[in-house]
Length: 244
Ligand code: ATP
Image (cartoon, rainbow, N blue to C red; front, side):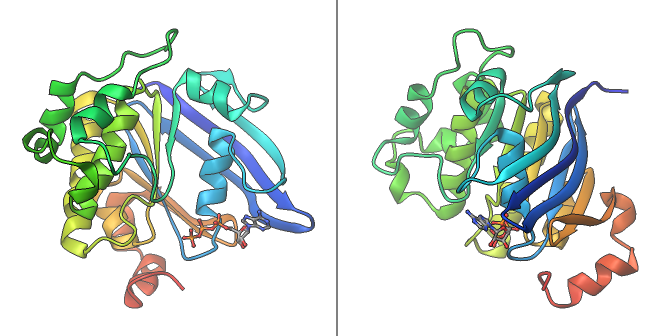
């Protein structure tokens, strides 16, 4: 059995009396892709932010987060990032005015990183489109390719766990498929642990090992993606395309 990379236990994030995340637990092993799906406002970004030590506003965060067996719950976002908890926030992560290659070469791992950074040739194997477009200005790439640059930049930072917050937002379905397939390839070829936030349950199930469907800050359905594809609770969600 592969080693646990990230274990979150009973994570709760409260804004005053309102629980944006309400006791969420999750385990991600090496070489595993775990997806968090759910509708707008379900608490996906708040949860992954709490894992990475980021928050909007001043919430009260409780629960425990462990990275490779070490309790990191009390650490700042900066300290967690140094240990390899790498969050790519929604819509951010690459400099539009730089070339692809500049974006990648400027991203460097912390000096005392626990894992090594990915080399450019490894990255171009996972994302061949980027290899072909090294000299192109990032802002002129397609939306999917720009997201690939953001993921690739994160890989240069030597992550232990890579957290992607809705990388597919605003992309056409075919591009989403291609992007998520690249993420799957990344997990399979490198053994990295990946936590993926994805609004589209069907797209998430197509690539993830495990899925957590969340509503109002709580996991309402959880299990291996292969089993959930035929789960009636999930089918109901499919009908509307996205979860309401
Ligand atoms: P989306 O897919 O729309 O990005 P989400 O599932 O990521 O949604 P969150 O952004 O995590 O949802 O929001 C969860 C809940 O937390 C929402 O009800 C939101 O209003 C609330 N929330 C988030 N940030 C704050 C804040 N700074 N102050 C108060 N409430 C907040």
